[in-house]
Length: 56
Image (cartoon, rainbow, N blue to C red; front, side, top):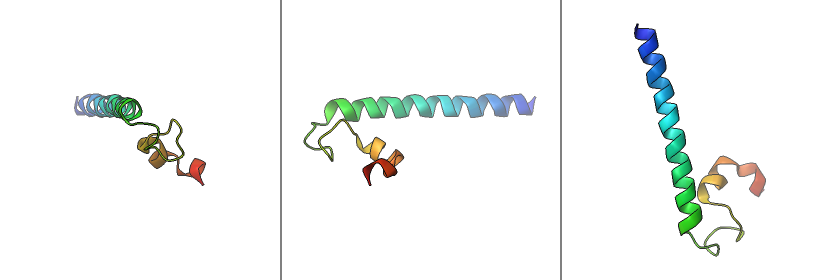
């Protein structure tokens, strides 16, 4: 029974963190003006931290 509880808790944590990440990404993309973003394109800070190779 402990294994089931641990599995459900782990899935819940991943699920919630994923939703929060998407909400944060949407907030940054919608509230920040394009001039503040590096490159002037549609790239929030979260995207920069997640994929550093694309900016090199």
